[in-house]
Image (cartoon, rainbow, N blue to C red; front, side, top):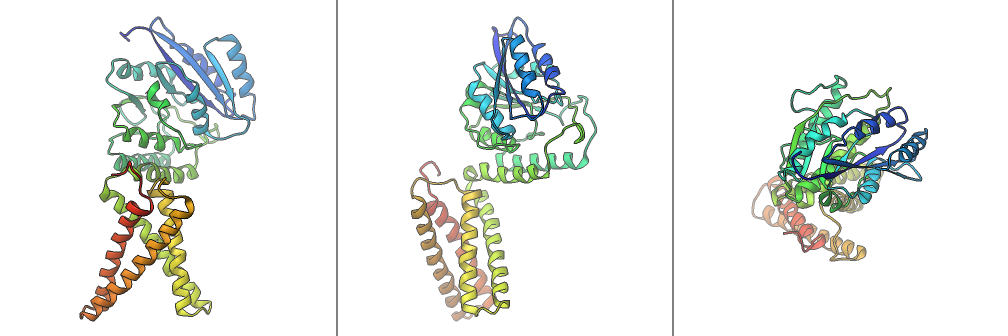
Length: 366
């Protein structure tokens, strides 16, 4: 590195990593040189082994080390959130304590940042000719799919969104609020970085993955959560056409709920009118929850009660528009299926724009 002396903050989330924690920190300490000072922040996430004791002993021996501890286990994202608040270096890197990633490669990842070309650098396990331990096919396929989906929503062309090795300018990472507690941190931070239009670089790294017998912790539930996070943290900032496609999926899910509930209620002996009304409003509740959970941020325009009142009013008005449009087209000699299909398309569009600009509207959304 050709710049003046810089300080790198290394945040090490740790949960039951007694077997590798000391070796990991020793390898990180080898990065120190005349141009690079270190600040190492170990965040023990309420380990049940002696990881915290090892971290404390390391802190006593090495002044560059700080140790933080959670009272109860919260997850990797929570540990990183705690660590990022305390960093003071010029740049910040995440280093897992399990040594699946080689700390010696951090120096290479720093180069685009020190040169001023990058704001963030991702270390990709799937880019370049570095050694890569051969392990789980379905994990590889899952990582590839999640990266592809993330790229589609962020308009980036990363090869490894789920990588641990992400190096940031300190002001960049401290300017982002981390909400995810577990492995959802990866798609969340990628979405929020993309929305800031930062200069993001990617470089190949080696990878020595662990088996579950060796202590690997990520599972299929984290993959499902990652899918949610990709949509949740990207959708509010998507271009209008893509937001509409997300809403079509939400509307389709609500429509399916409507149909299934209607059929169940009919089969249980309820009258058609009661079943139709009850199923419709149940589906509207599902639609509302999916809109809040996936597509739109919570808005400041309404209180919670006001938002729900506005939503119910919109649903009621559009249900009437749907009914009247169907009747009008049918009376104009249109086939029944065409009349209903056209009315549904009108209602779908009105629902989306009504939710976007009335119920869930916010000043920053164009």
